Length: 344
Image (cartoon, rainbow, N blue to C red):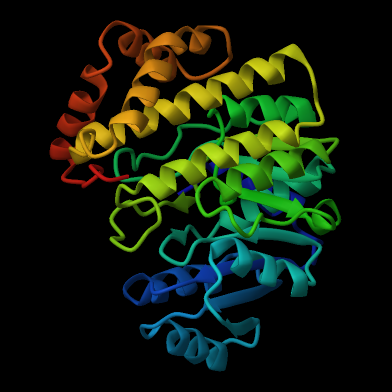
């Protein structure tokens, strides 16, 4: 549940609002999770929705599940296409979206009934180009925030925040005015970090971004088919490529944004170092392992120069002193919460 004050705020701000909101869901072989996802969207408190389910060539029952829900709810549109990846699937949804606002949900995740109304209320109340929330439910922390804390950001503020990992880097937990996305699309060849690129591009085109912190999105870590579940050197290389593309396309050339990008580069190498140690594959990719280890140790102090979270700063200090301790701590957390993160 949301705090009472927030529920009252939503009711007040949306009392006469009928803006159509498009929810785009890329779908690929998520039959075990898809029904819960679709039902959570159909059960949104805000009724004026366009729900676009893009079946990206699924080989399981996902496509049939999409069709069955479309027969029950006229707000649902289903697009079946050849498998071309999650970026292509989301772009297909963007190309046909008609809502004034657009948001995304992954097919293996699900949302609270207030997911749409919360972000829409923020966007409408403050005439924002983008509304987002900085927190979400996950396997390790399923407690709601005690109260909201709404911030008004410029595009530069938001770019710095997401590069410093103060905002979820995926495209979920965000609502965009469609006009902001007229010339913004996901990069088809990028399948790890595609949301990161998309968000930075959209933030740079926005004048006002509203950031709340209440949790309305349930991010699933236990889907074995997720792109983030198993270790893959190709995924790592794609993730680093995504960061390079972000740097190439930065239109805000301030010191704070440049330093924030350097932090994102360090954090990404650090994550890949952790993944290799946990997956016990460092001997299979010795050159890449050494690169990640060197960046992790040598550039760790950049975390002390940026407005990132306290946990990231502690992580950086530990990585500087003893990099091996972080994978060890992650393994302990995995066992404590009974969640497999070894190959994320």
